[in-house]
Amino acid sequence: MARAAELRSERGEKTQSVVTAGVTADQLRSFIERIERLEEEKKALAEDIKEVYAEAKSEGFDTKIMRQVIRIRKMDEADLQEQEELIDVYKRALGMLPDVETGE
Image (spheres, helix red, strand yellow):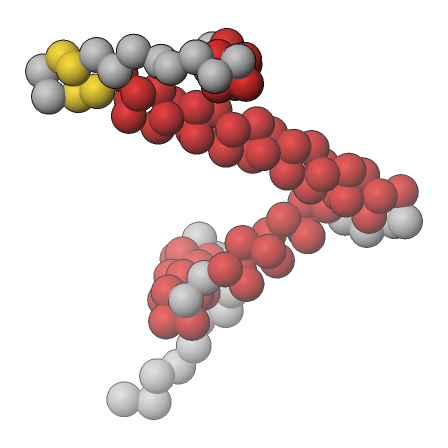
């Protein structure tokens, strides 16, 4: 669809601007084509990221841990602190960490 609009534009043809329920066809087409281009870019970026992980893995890095580190780096400091505290509470409840004396 985007290519057809480009061809019409190159030939100097005007696209018919149909208005339906307050929405013009040209405006809608513009939004759709922009989203389609962005989706293509997103797919290309995802492939690039996949290649970087593959390269890191071939160099001996653990990509699962790398993904976790990236996720942690994206987090707000307060959210990260809260998550770490909850993990400790859960581990303690399951006997995975020793009980800590509170000194109270």
